[in-house]
Amino acid sequence: MESKIDFNYFLSERAKRRPKASKFINFIFTTKDEWTMFGAGIPNICFNPFKSLEFSINDENNSKITLTQQELNIAQEYPRGYGYPGLLDTLRDFQSRFHGLDVNNYEKTWELFLTNGSQHSIAVIFEMMLNDGDSLLIEEPTYGAVACVSNSRDINMVALEMDDEGIIPENLVSILSNWDYKKRFPKLMYLIPVGQNPTGLIYSQKRKLEILSIAKRFNILILEDDPYYFLQFPKEGQDDLETIPLEPSFLSMDKEGRVIRLDSFSKVLAPDSMKEILDKHLGDLVQYRVPDAGMYFWLKFQDLEDSFTFIKTYMIPTQILFAPGVTFSNFRGFNQYLRASFTHISLEEMDTTIETFSKVLKQYIKDKKERNE
Ligand SMILES: Cc1ncc(COP(=O)(O)O)c(C=O)c1O
Image (tube, rainbow, N blue to C red; front, side, top):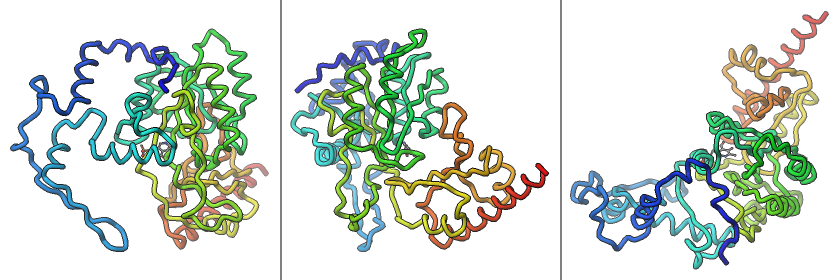
């Protein structure tokens, strides 16, 4: 079924200004492989620099993948504007398998395109949807790079409060129903539903349905940024990582075409156990909730008033770096927090690092006490 949403309403002025002719030509260029392209600046394939390419895979069999000259010729031309056709086919099947999209209706009811990563996608979507001065609904705290991409556009960031199941529907409804129309009404809501960065929580299914229904009521699109979708951890009683049921995505529940979903290849997990190490070295000095998914522990320290300054003055000399809480806030909050990634260092290294961190923190607390005496 085709969407009834008027997507024109969501386009930025910049996106609307794109000339119609170039849109049409681009459409032919990107969808009609069989046409003879006199209109495009495509070099002849006999000049392509690469004939074949072999990749060694980091698996138990040391498998290899070889790309043939024919495959490489497609990659060395301008392939269809949406990305390499073979990869698009695979990803289309993948989206259909995990999010229930109908492959037969591809291009009629949904589209998929490749970028250089989710962060690039965010930049592209903001370019397409946001004017200077527009409002954007975001979780507080959220992934810091969103601010980097939106800062240049002078975006009015609107913070959505969260509990352990995601953003709070009552808070969202209250913000939207009592909107101050001196600012532009939001058209887009940016959410990280699995392994929310930095808190590590997973939105409940019930919560997602409530949010979708609010988005429909207020005509808002949802940007579902989900790079940690496959990094969901087993809950109590589930011990097999291979068979745990994955949470249904916003996209899979969307009946209207209201969700733009971002997937990423950049997040791969080597599961380790950080909890015991934190408890062993930090005990009551730290508060946290074990993440449901993703790569991070979101740590709160009662004794820190300003984790950014603490990192600069106390941690830099140790050459151990945590992400300060304030970098996940668009409102200069979360100053008692640090985010720790637990995926790329060994358990032994984690143990010595957290031990050092604990010593430095205790020194900081001692210094502070002495200053106050
Ligand atoms: C929520 C979120 N989105 C996007 C990204 C970046 O993804 P990519 O590497 O695909 O650009 C990150 C990485 O930290 C992230 O946490």
